[in-house]
Image 1: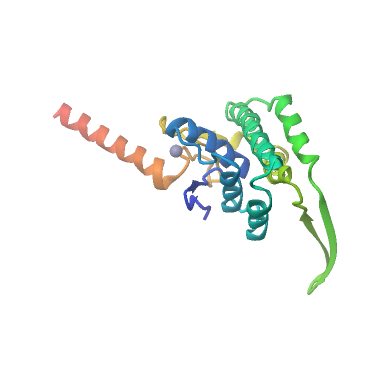
Image 2: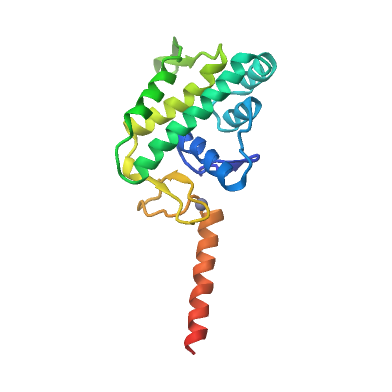
Length: 207
Ligand SMILES: [Zn+2]
């Protein structure tokens, strides 16, 4: 089962790039950005499973007061805008804008991946590790998520929640690809409940 929420963050997008875009929608809706500063960004990345506890601790203790960290945060917020433009286009069945692809490529250039040859029970394999040695590399996994979505995802499955007061983006992994809500636990049950009372009111009005 996909995680719907972890701590105070909401994860309904299936792709972390969509979850990241959703934080901007939540910010616009509630007036409080779930990612208000560099520390918030680090917490979000950790809860999203994009950095581990050691990397979170490194980022918070070594970087958080530095200028590079502030630049990384500003870069993340700009990147969120570019990802939002991509999500908007995909959800309305259009192509991702070139500006969005350029923004992803710019982030992917900061990626440093090391491969280690290992021997396991069923043979040899390569293990890939992505370096995190400077604050701007924190955003790389989000760029990777967006690249994964564009390269390997079925782009017709990028949708927005049908609850008009929600409208979060999600990637529909339901069996028949008929999912309409970001989450059945929240918007799904709320909208079904609203439809139920609407039908009841109509029945009462007719009788
Ligand atoms: Zn929703």
